[in-house]
Image (cartoon, rainbow, N blue to C red; front, side, top):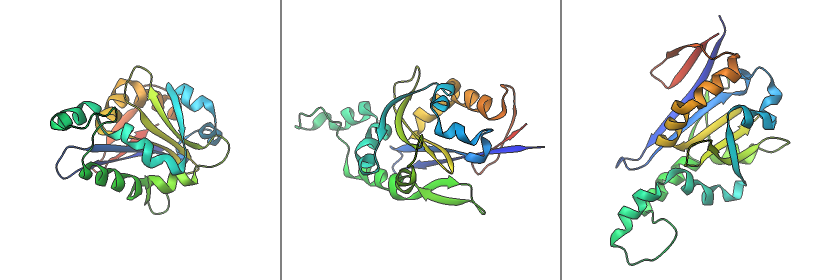
Length: 197
């Protein structure tokens, strides 16, 4: 029996206001290693690229992915600041800093290792590799999609990633990985998903 393992990790701020999910698909799971370096990956997953993320711009782009503008409007309702930009308190940016620079992305090495989003974005160089803010077709929140030699990383607010997986991303991903829609799934308590093929 062949098994495909997909890794997920969820970060939650201590006050419970911020939640981020990181979902990793190791490169060995893809039938064709070149798919990670092609536009057909995004087409198959129905991901609409919004813009490319440059390593030095990751800090500027991630608030759009993690922070809910509706929440920030509620928090800022008593503020005298008149701004188009969402207000995020200092502890929100501390959460963002940990998400970007902390080692929270599960990478399949021997043994498993943890890597930071910042390091992965910096390593995403070469034809077809890179980091993109994208939208799942039919969804309104941007999600970070990262293709690197180690595989594909999907990162966003926990709610956005969960909705995207429920609304077909997981099914399309499994179809891409195993070539069929009806694979049997087992869940393990550590966030690893095993797919029997």
